Length: 391
Ligand code: GAF
Image (cartoon, rainbow, N blue to C red; front, side, top):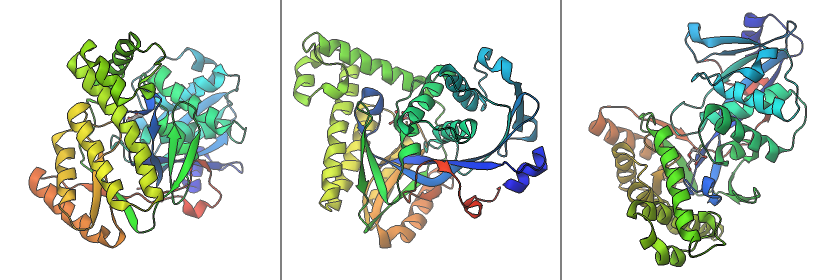
């Protein structure tokens, strides 16, 4: 990557490389913007950005993953504050640059080169990985509290990209830990590490359906949850978000809201409880219970929250018929992207073959399959040998 950087911008003694991982969420879906609980894992799949100071007052960003005509962009630093969203991949780093400027961090002239292994549109959070890696590259060694960095990257996505996301993806990209999932409390923004039992593995299967609907439907779900909170407040004034609501409270007022809104709220309330039960079961090594909770989560996303699709449902159902599988569910925003399956270690090889064959037979598409080995959160790359080759 250092050579590629030199080929593009000329050699520089000051190149540094920053890495930010993608994620898979084990359980706790669409709970983050309701200030509830999530349990993601940072992946080995990651975005890398090489950066060195520039000398001519410009910011240049090049992505190795774009077609040549679309790969390189440059801006005068003085104009960044007045840029509008462009509907382009550079909205992510520019959104981050603007948020840094808004809290008083100067953006210096710099050249950036992006390389990454997180598949786009697969629900494994390539956007947050790009935001976090961009923030580290712009900061280039200047310090910021990790939780502030997560919130800043979330603001970039909400304010500039225009996606009203929760905090999960940016947070896990920063706080990920090897061998652990991270239970995040999306209200307090605290977390606890949840060691993954060593008898199990998690595998993500990419349906190869790009989650195109996700933007508008996501906004719709956020609005439906807000409508549920408003209805709940008429009876329970202390409720500030669905995080504060019990199943009993919801049942008491569900006739005050449209049936769809009540189902959306039921998903969020039951999903928060499932995260806590999953973490408890994990601490006791109760693998079957963990697996069952994943399947319950999927059914709730499928029927109550309605963010699944035929391909994801098929992958879950097919996985559950394969030996050694303990549980399976869609992961991420939905409408395509990946499932995550929990299985006994020794079953992983057979699972890959069988799920790929079943999916190909049904949809005539070969799914991509990724091991979800929990990895460390974002930071500067210390050993350049660990940077993946360009593909
Ligand atoms: C997307 C969002 F970006 C996250 O904040 C989260 O809401 C997720 O969908 C659903 O759990 O990844």
